[in-house]
Image (cartoon, rainbow, N blue to C red; front, side, top):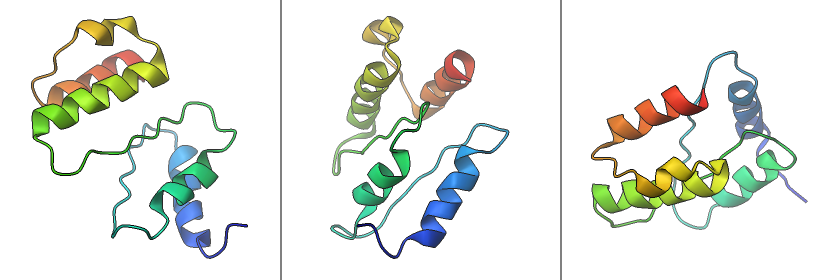
Amino acid sequence: MFVGRRKELELLEDAYHSTKSELVVIYGRRRIGKSSLVNHFAREKPYFFPFEAVEGETTQNQIRHFTVSLRKHTGDQLLDHVDFKNWEQVFSYITDRLM
């Protein structure tokens, strides 16, 4: 049973059904149900790509981790050969290739 996150679920639904592309960041203390919230929301939703950051890593390692996750979600083999230098390049890729 999933209780007590009605407002958060409504915000996620609004972003999901937006007429423009949306990036939602969910943050907070450990062990408060962030992953459970995302998993509950994402059930049966196509075009939803959850990603969990790796705490305490450099920006480059975060980008590499994100790229691997994005490759798994999209199946885009180009990502096997791309080495993004910064987040701007990552988001440009997403905008150009996926939107």
